[in-house]
Image 1 (cartoon, one colour):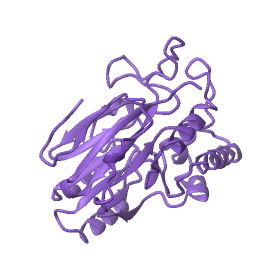
Image 2 (cartoon, rainbow, N blue to C red):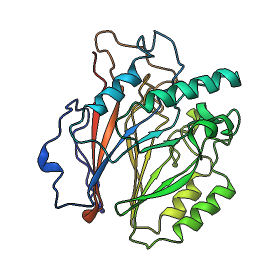
Image 3 (cartoon, one colour):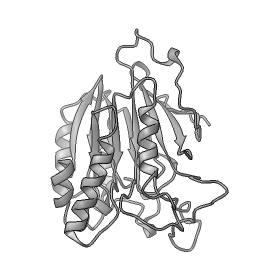
Image 4 (cartoon, rainbow, N blue to C red):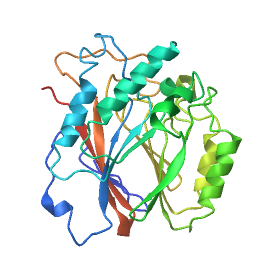
Length: 292
């Protein structure tokens, strides 16, 4: 599958389960090119065999698969819903700690976290921050400016005025042709508001990003691939590592899709994103979780 657009963002190899990379992809001459891995919606603590009989094993399998990569990623980003909802603050912290310890089993130690609503909405991110730090922040890596947006700690599905002002201030430091990647949990655009697949004030964030020529957004939340453009800004959702959800509006209500024993781990996976800096190009490769 290949999608072309003005800024040459391409998506390739969707659904691939190949775990070995060709050495020609990562040349020594391309010093600023790099790749990262995105994992999302691990929902540690979820336990229902109808939807995933391997609920305590799937995340570990993904970690093991990434650790087998011949060339390790520059960093790994976990785009929210690290844990499942738990009303008991003590149990919630237990799950956060367990998930953190499992994820820290990655060979690469540069790990970027952001919360999902299951991690943060019950207490405005208080427990999450005890284990993973700030809920929104920026970082720079090899010519790309990354912006992590928190659109989950506010239970109204909002970013909020204070954070929007912070985003505006951060963008004000950048040139209009800067390479910008945004990580967030919920989609910033109105994918399907009836299923909470939106951000109430996401349009305001998109408006702040629109003056910049090279912007891509990676998010989670919807437990499946979805590729959407708001003008020149591309938005790409990631698969979950725990259970599938239906396509937007395909059913009368949002329900988990049952586990298919004839196709174990169907629809579950993670992705590798290669950043080709000179062309403002990102190559996305999806990996399915494998039995074993």
